[in-house]
Length: 134
Image 1 (tube, rainbow, N blue to C red):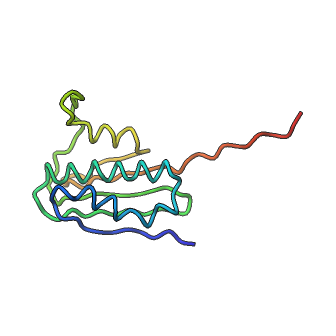
Image 2 (cartoon, rainbow, N blue to C red):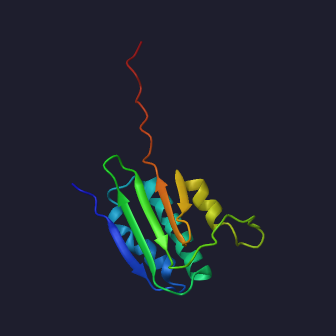
Image 3 (cartoon, rainbow, N blue to C red):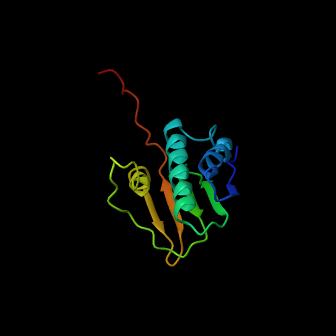
């Protein structure tokens, strides 16, 4: 069974993160629970940043899963760049979004001159079961 690619746009308003998570639901049956959870959190954080810092244009989201289970995605708010990790202050509850993405994603970055943030989530590692009794 092939895993569907998702491509959708969100209106740049406070509902974007919730609607982005809802749009991911077709992938839930195809991904390990921990990967699906991480994907939901990354999409939430990136869309929230797009609403807060973007130009107000529609937010384009794309997510694909390759044959090995690698999740590839991006969020683009149509902005012209200037994205970076800041020293978030947990006591203020802000500034931690990209730190979360950095922690969860295998790799991530920003396309030069844009606000298109891409990310990769590695498939869960398979651990060998118990070996034969000795």
